[in-house]
Length: 193
Image (cartoon, rainbow, N blue to C red; front, side, top):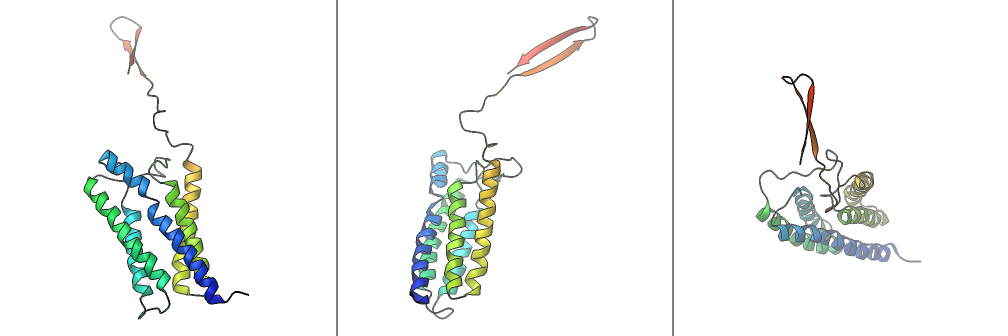
């Protein structure tokens, strides 16, 4: 039988790998931002929240606060650096009117699937880590993270098909109908592009 400490270390290492994947999952988004030199409709909120989250977990994992939490400190220290880089890139290319839309537009174009999936997996893994040696302070935020990650995946599933695909949008002409009041009942139709 595996001891609780060994099981917790194994789950913690798996959690670090998944967390590293979570921190790297926005790379395609930021590559797109750099290529376009514009943040388009992306929002900085997830990256700012992750940065603050990493700061708090680094503090929590310090030996004077919570001993034997080296796995929590190392991965969140790495996350702190990565998220800082994302925010610097974001604010270099951001304009004041940058706002994201998912439910309002029924589109997931600016909601990366990989980020949502890895967020869900990360919350599940760290919740399991916390439950091995019940640690309420790790269980609650990561349990909520798993629930919110699942909600993002459900939203993605609901709105994926209604998201316009790049290069497949067809702009149809509009028809303008006017009635000529002078000519006695004539109707003129104009097709505008």
